[in-house]
Amino acid sequence: MTDELEELAAEFDLMGDWEERYRYVIDLGRDLAPLSDNERSDINKVRGCASQVWLTTEAGPDGTLLFRGDSDAHIVRGLIAIVVRLYSGRAPGEIMAFDPRAAFDRLGLVGALSTQRSNGLFSMIERIRRDAMAVKAGESAES
Image (cartoon, rainbow, N blue to C red; front, side, top):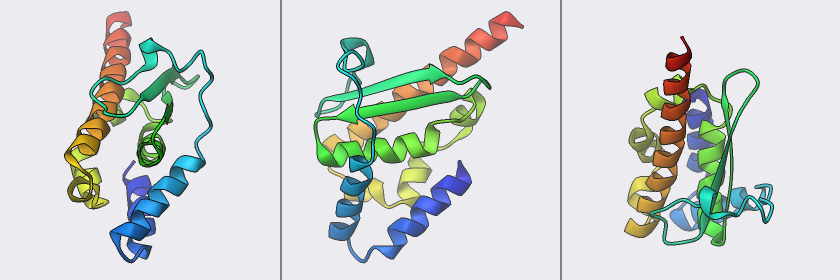
């Protein structure tokens, strides 16, 4: 995850100002595969976001978690793309050990986002961490 974070940080560093970075975040969101109507369900909805946000979690064959998401807001779709890039394909323990506040501070997003967007971003991460914790708890219960 640290390598992916540094790669993202290098991409952000290439942008001159926050207007360019916002455009880049929006562009990242355009590359997200859309969720199906069935996946845009209440069970996949992320609470605590001002925009509509849906996040799916699937267990990979190797014990990793795979995340996909979507939103009705362009910037939020971009934030989802960043979150998915950092967290998808990771083991639950790796997800739990990762410091999201430091990561998004490293990208400069913590200070650049409105309070509502920042709260929404951390609601998405909290949902991912909760799903990872549930999988990890299930693993230890099986042992």
